[in-house]
Length: 183
Image (cartoon, rainbow, N blue to C red; front, top):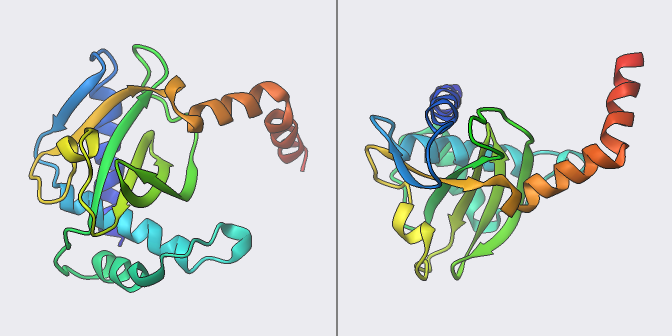
C-alpha cells in the first residue's frame, strides 16, 4: 500500500504545482496511471473501514473486501469503482494543502460513493454499479486511464473549504492549535 501512497503523494504535489496558474477546467497529468491512484484511494477507504469509531470508521459494506484486495494486490478494478480527482484551488498561484477530510458517504451524478480531501485534492470515489448521469465524473473518471484526469475548481464552492475556513475564523481551530503548542 505504501507504493500507492508514494505515487499519489508525488502526483498530487505535481498537480498542485502545475495548476497554480491554470484556468479552471479539466486537465491530465501525463504518465500517472488512474488505476494506481484508485489503488491508493482503495487503501485509504479500507484503512477507515477498519479504524475505530473514534478515528472515523466508515462502513464500506460489500466493498470492504474489494477495497482491501485493490490496495494489497493487483486485483482487476471493476467498473463499480472509479473516482473523480479535483484540485481545489483557493486563488491563482495556490499550491498549498488547506485541509484534510476523512472519507464521508456521498452521492453525486446519481451514484453512491465517498468524498475525501487529501493532499490538496478533493476526490469523489464511486462505489456503485450504476453509471454516472452526465457531468465531470462521467467525463473525467480515472479508472483505466494512463494519464490521470483531474479537474481544477474553486475551493470556495466546496464545503470542505468553507468548513475549514469557518473553523479557522471562529477561533476553535486556533484555540486547539494553541493548546497543542503549550503541551
